[in-house]
Figure (cartoon, rainbow, N blue to C red):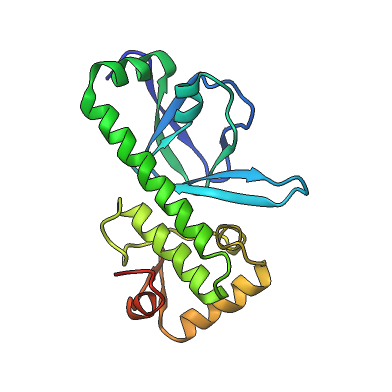
Length: 203
């Protein structure tokens, strides 16, 4: 274990990092899911990213030595490792492999954000399927589009997709009725990849 590193365990819906706080350290997710959120001038929530095992939280404020520009909230129970800013900077300066891994992680996060931006004008089914695909990839570290997705409140799916709760509930019910998404005692999963391929969500 590195100096300045310790493990934290948090419950679902607990705020992990606060907008405008000082960037005194960062967290590495070992288990669970979190969302990065910001609010518009009229108070509307925007989900900037969904993070899972292996992802970092709070690294940008440490890199810029400024304040945080978004909240991070646990979507599920989580286990994470907290790393103090000094230890993080030492890793970046002393290990090129770590710096390269960070660059790849940030590039992947930007690519996901770009995809969400491009989907803003798509129909509700496409947007919700895209969210479920992102969640499956996040849970499996990008390996399995059919991976189990933990049970999440539909209000969270709605915020991620940029849809109303009513539209999300109706669209999700249709996806289940068509067998495109199936329930699981521990969550849900995509059951049919063909609709995602038809919509250009999956190669």
